[in-house]
Structures are given as structure tokens and as C-alpha cells.
Length: 233
Image (cartoon, rainbow, N blue to C red; front, top):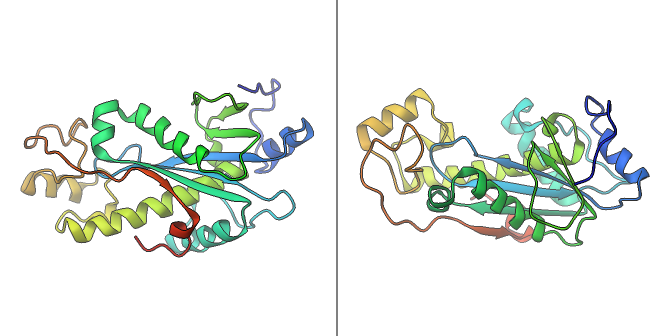
């Protein structure tokens, strides 16, 4: 894993890390982030984004700091303007089997392996190391401090939200279109009244007390750009 010089870790300029590593000779820098790690239902989604060095997407910020409308607009721009974008999806059954950390790492690996051209360096949100030979750097709160990671956070969030909107139609009554699977008061109320659906994570607190585990066919794999562009899953 690439090491940052001591004292640089508190940088606030969103382009700081990218510029620093470009000076070290890295050309294609991929930002990696996930969405849905703390949810009670649905998949964990990871995105990997390589921005064009000569044409960064303006307005990018941590996805949590943006409105849904802003995220949607930036999502489309990132997909169309970035050098490469890829998404990895791992569903609830695999999350229960492997635990959420391992499922998150798998989703990130799927996303990275889907990039074309391949990256020279990975910037990853959080203290995560991927089992790859590529140079990589985990950055605490990277979605607030790296332009590439912030871009990945937007792609992962919007893509996952679209998946959950689709699940809201398949599994009505849980309010997935509103809370996207997070443990809100309304979601917990629906769980008490209905029990878990097939996309609930049975090993998670808040779900594990309800019902018997069912076999499900969770979404899993890489998403191509033809799916990402204009997707309304």
C-alpha cells in the first residue's frame, strides 16, 4: 500500500491526493467507495471511478452532502465524462454468508476489475486494503477529501438507490423507495408488522429476530456502462 508523507493526511483540497500521486508518476488513479454497508436490506454497492486529469467533473462532493437531484445530475456527468467507471454489487445472501466487511471488499474488487483501462493506483474510502497487487491508499473520510473517491461515492449511492427503488415495487409495504434499506423508524415498524423480505440481511441486528431464512437470488456482479448510462433500475 502506498504510504502518505506524515502531515499530509489532513488535506482538504479535493484534488490534493490525486495531484500528489500524479507527481509520483501515477497516471490513472481510481477512487473507490461503497454505498449500503450499514443497511438492513438490499445489496452493498461499490463504485470505481477514474477521472480524466484534464477534465475533472465540477461540483463533485461527498454524496451525503448533496441533494438527490444534485447526485442524479452529477452521476450522469461522471458516467459520461470520466475515463472509466465500474460498479460491483453483492447481495444480501452473500452479505449474510461472508459478513459485511468481506462482502464490501468483494464488491470493491468487482468494481476495480471492471475498469478499462486498468488503474495505476487505487484511492479507497476508509481503512480498507484490497487483495490486489496494485498500489493503493486507504483514506479516512476519503469521500470528503478526494475528488476520485467523492465521484465514486456518488455513482455507488445513485446506482444503489435505483436498485432499491426497483425493490420497492417487488416488495411493497417496506418503504424501500424512501429509506433505501436503512434502519429508520418506519422500516423497523414494517419489519415488526411484516417480517423480513427476501432481500433483508438476516444476520443484522434489527432483522435477525424475525422469521426463517429464505434462499434468495441476490444481485451480484459488475455493471457495464451500458447499464449505468440512464439506468432507472
